Image 1 (cartoon, rainbow over the protein chains, first blue to last red):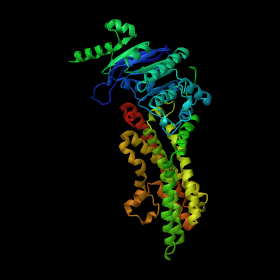
Image 2 (cartoon, rainbow over the protein chains, first blue to last red):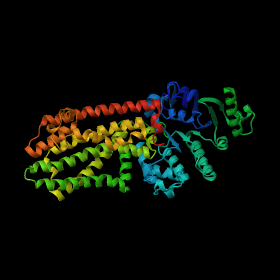
Image 3 (cartoon, rainbow over the protein chains, first blue to last red):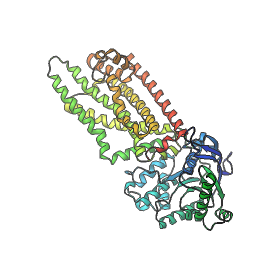
Image 4 (tube, rainbow over the protein chains, first blue to last red):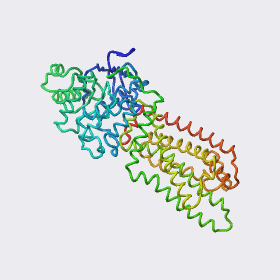
Length: 253
Length: 273
């Protein structure tokens, strides 16, 4: 841990955000933390505020109030100090289709000011089983290969904190399982912290050390998967998720 | 994993090279992009070149005034390409849904502009060199007859083009792809007041007053002065650079404000989706 850093990799305190002055809160008073070497999921229905929260964590948006600190640095004011230690992949984003896999990775290795670029690219290609496609243009890859390419880009700077927004949404079960195993290996071997969102509750159940459940901008539950299932007396996470959303709806009515 | 890795220095060269590299590879593979660099300048050159051939046969036309049309065309194209180089690169990032990747990288929005300026220099060099060579080959017009002044004319026009490119980028960032048309159109708003093919003295008073605030008008007046009278009004060139500095300051200020506002309102997150 570098001087001045907190034990938490990420610490969010009372974060609030809305897009219009009198509009609803997209994120409403959220506090959470991530510790080194953890896999943490944020789950919630569409419109729960997950994306807004992650965008604030990445420094793409500034909170209206509250703070998000990554490695002890406030992301609203000091994003560039820690941006080289984090990365992000989302199925909503893409990379230029007319560049090959290797060219895209080369560009980002340069943009992240990496040294030993060739070795780094090869390592990432091997990690994600993308070596056979290194000289193929991204536009000619399958959907699943493009998703892995996005994650390859997110690993190019050897991040200590990785954000993945629905990383397996476009992957078949076999490739999803391979990717999860790869990511779990990285978390274990390199003590990387992983924050990810998913609508696949079975995946969240198997993959996460802890999870945060969000609805309408608020955190409605948090904890380890077994603890949450015991607390809410459910047999699986999907039932818990549905129960939680239903409860929220009823309390609003 | 090395947590003591230092942040990317503000003046690191690799991120700029990374942005430039992407652009060069994009162009290397794309026929439409090559057309943008060579096809349109070539067509312009042919149309205006043939016109000068015709005008040269009219006895009342001064030969130097006729040839200055070709000089004006080459320099105007350079200004246009400089502005486009910035705005279109930004649009390419939006179209390829890649902008967010850049905005979360350990670089500043000014690195993105710096990379765009570098790629614009490469494109302008390529496009202008070919156009200048063809102008000599087909119409015996030597742009280098402008001597050392040419360097200053080019620099002044590049600076204006970049400033307008940055400003256009800021507007696209703020208002989204609806403002995309500006990337191709904004420069033509300045053309009537830039004295490209005609001196400022023939403009109506209002237009002449506006042209005094346009850096390019001093460059094109200077070019005609060099070609026709063989001398350069240095004060005018200084004025062009002064205005360029003003344009660049305004453009960078607006760009910076839009980025700050975008981080508050999130309108950049919807671009390209």
